[in-house]
Image (cartoon, rainbow, N blue to C red; front, side, top):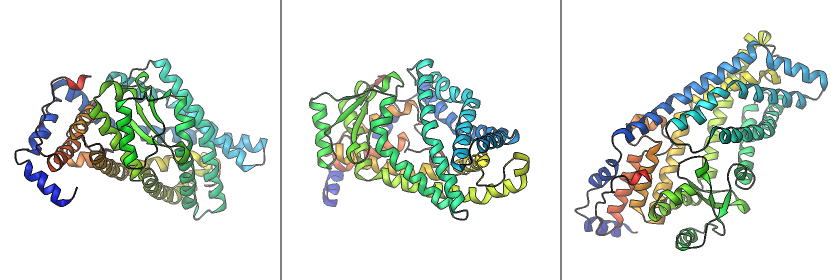
Length: 417
């Protein structure tokens, strides 16, 4: 649409008030439902802090009782290969830290989700999936740690830069293989049935040259009540996926609005861009580790049984420092992701042309996202635009692009579907 078209549309809608239209949606979430949503999201502000504190405490315990020192010494008695010592130390570190923090994982991942009525899954199913995730981490994380320690040994001054590149390579590989080999371990993916809705999704994809030979539906309802969709993979693994909650709980305009948003991530290259920016953050954190960790080891290394940074027994030191740096970088990470999400929102409105569907979806996400935060609160803690921001964007788009637009007042209770 040209600037002249925008002016014409705006002139054609002098009676359409964006604030009134926005408030009509926001006011559908009131009373206990809004208090519950706010409490869930605000409680999450503390989870990152306490999770970091618990993680650092675990690292300190492993150092205080010289656990990684003992594992590394055992590995060196069995083999002269440094890679074996790193691998075994990483394996033991993952197993012990996971076991110690299991109560925290149960609270944050299961009990709290059940408390706020966001989970459909029983404890046995949830624990089984946690075991699958743990098994995968035992396979892949030690490989990543081995690569990081290899570059520490070979480039002691610039290892932080090479470690960032290593993380980037692992992230790229994960983007390629995850949709085909990892995601099916947790959910069943079936081809979306042919019909008018699929044809409309394919039409939107075709406008932007998005491969749509396969559109999958995942059975996420066995785990959660959340609605979701994505365009994932790279090259031959690219696929469009929406979960069954989106199909069963929302209307066609809402589904098309969500799919337009997700296609925006693909067209705008957010997968690569987000990884690139996150690697910048990782690089800064690794650099800080390269400065702080050696000083800690110089002061406490003998007490911990850690000889140097390249000693795999130093793994808890690296982990603790990196965790604190990552926590401090949370606002920057949130801003990077939130910016991409806002761009995808704008793209999705143009692609699907369903502003009321988009606004309705933004309100549905209020089940677990605070709908009207303050500006500082949104900057610090939101990795997506708030519901208020999204609804207002949709209503502004409607005013600018839909001749004769009228304020829609959603029916009471529509969010309960």
